[in-house]
Length: 67
Image (cartoon, rainbow, N blue to C red; front, side, top):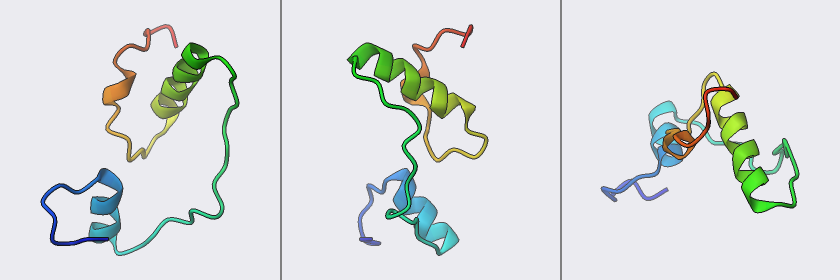
């Protein structure tokens, strides 16, 4: 983590603010989709389902309310 940069990612800000790291070796793959557009839709759905997401959700604007 470079604390001296003015352009921090959300993950970096969370790590610095909460003084903890993520377990990158124990990630869980939530879905596998071969088709790109279906994969984007699946990703948006999983992002929206998160209660305490670090994702800014700017990439879920195209997700229809029906999901």
